[in-house]
Image (cartoon, rainbow, N blue to C red; front, side, top):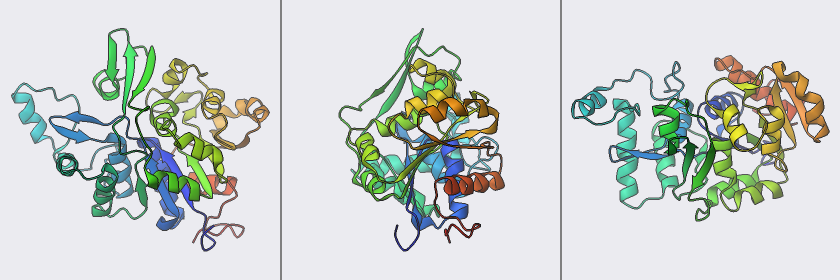
Length: 325
């Protein structure tokens, strides 16, 4: 540990990852925290590079997120999309007018040759985010979903098709050529606690772990490694993680979540509704924390963060045995 404070690295996708990240910022100092966000659902729209999970993390940490939707900016308008629709362009990917400023800025700097990592950090700092937000790779990744109609980019499946088609297969283009950022590897190596957020294991977390070198870094880590399951009552609160686990060859249960992280975690946090999974999970050698994992507001986010830290044996400010300032 550095100065008695645990160094915490969180692997995260969009909404679920952002909620836990916000909870951690409520109970720990920002200099303790690094968040490694998913970039495999990035896609170009209207000539602009859009990074949905990174933006959801950034907007959430900045306190600017649209809390009703869980993504995008609050108090948003859509005049640009209305204008594009009048011109006959597809506008199924909702990009608000304020949000478009982020994408214009990102795309301009990418065209100037700046590292995507540096761009993401610049955006986060400009919006007042003080923790360390890191990209797992500066290379282009693209999650693709196979349906009966053929292969779709993840945003086409998730937003345009609203997750309706049956998932037949999932592939992440660009993984073989991708290289991890030094910042991501350093955050994993330095961590006292490695957390995996309650994000989709298949399309939010796997694209981080499967970048060559990242899984190996997690396996070598001396940190306590804890995942928070995205399932409640055997299903996801939002999104297709349950169906995607099955498509990836895992059970649609906390056992499937655990198997997807086999060799990478020491413990798993599950919801009280899934307490019946405890015996089978314990047989896999995992430490378990059973609690209420649904995060509906700021108090829930902070509570879960405190419970995860306590479960991991790491400090938090409201327990004398722990010491997060």
